[in-house]
Length: 470
Image 1 (cartoon, one colour):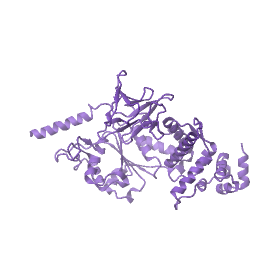
Image 2 (image 1 turned 90 degrees about the horizontal axis):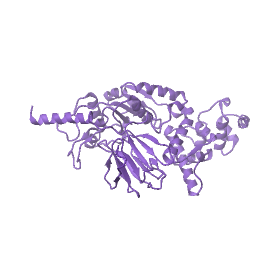
Image 3 (image 1 turned 45 degrees about the vertical axis):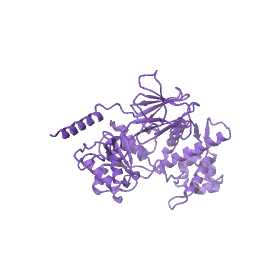
Image 4 (image 1 turned 120 degrees about the horizontal axis):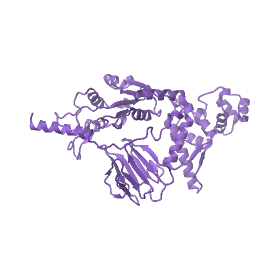
């Protein structure tokens, strides 16, 4: 064996040891400590960037005056290291290393600072603290508790998730945009107990240039191109011992399909960009989950790749099939606003009844947007008028106003109808209608009982009787 070959083999062995047995603990979550609030533990995902500050559009809002509107940013860099950068805050950011509560290192300048498990970030003051954790919460911080879901479709989905989390077959999540495919993929990963990270690849946003695509998915070595000052693990290798989630897999470029086939089969030239021809690393091992809103045979995916992706298919139910879950979903969205935006709000029973009778072409994502936009707009209006915002009440009028404005911007399509018509998209027998649903429909039609009765498909006298019920 030549000296050069021996050197490459030793380097490869060291790389395996460094990535495995000798690797430091992985940061998977953060604990948010804010004055006047209970501690909040949230999982951290490598594909998500987190901004902290007093601004309402921050990932987590801090109300302390010592915190700037945009105080600091936390993200996972190309080397899979969690790093933090102070955003030129007024009072600065400080790092307290694990086990050194007496040490406060000031973080200033544009250079990101690498963090480790147990480190604490102080935003201007010790009253606003972020602690990096190795153990993520069992369920996603922004997720609805599964026990709170009532619909048969949601319970059937949860039963399937529990099953697929306990095998290692590939999984395809099939369903319309907004039905919760990304959340379901993350939940499968969390329940599976895999030690590696959850790596999301948005296939629709991958570069079409072959070299850039190779760098993104397979990584590059130092000096592979101008500006490549260090090694970068590609998405496929970053997912080693974890889960690779291919979102919008129907948009996967042909070159990326070839790379993926090579990795899954353990054959071919799946080396990082710029690597020596005879320095092919071992194929990474990961759990493969993909998501598509288009039937796979109607896509341009290679037939042999489709066979490898298919594994255990799982169809996502629409929100129309999960109407009983709208109330707990709304409750969770409001809880998110309370913990992350410092906005305390509730939706009236009439408003909730209206939401439960409306059709949702944008699925759960649309429902979430309606709740968050309506709530934050009302909070902003009250602040602008100098009124108290401690407790906000979201009624039918505010919700309908936003929905009607939304429809004007979106425009009508062949499959969509105006908001007030959508409330009656799912008809019920008169005996099954609740008083709240009737009240919501009357409010949606500006108090016109005749129009509300027509929309519900019931007689006017029946509507009046419902309104008189206690």
